Image (cartoon, rainbow, N blue to C red):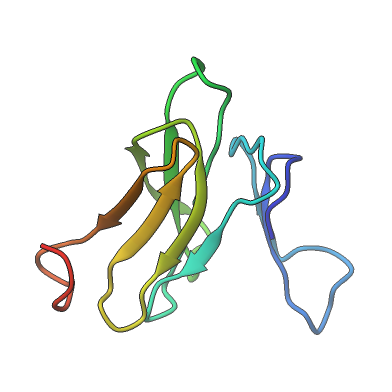
Length: 115
């Protein structure tokens, strides 16, 4: 889950009292922030949002096996407000707070789609 309080939390819905894991340092100023799993379920990705002039938005990737952050990348704009990790194309589609739309892909693992 994500909220405007900052952290991302991973829950086991069979035991909803406390999160399985929590990651801080993920600023989020908009209630509409996304997170998604990779097609193989090995990664969880979320976006950040900051006030204009306070830097750029980021995508943070977390291993669902080790629960550790494995990568963080800068993206255009100050906010990731919508995101989808396409299950078949293995590409990430995202929209930012400035109205931009982007497709992120890896030439080694993405299938068809954007290049």
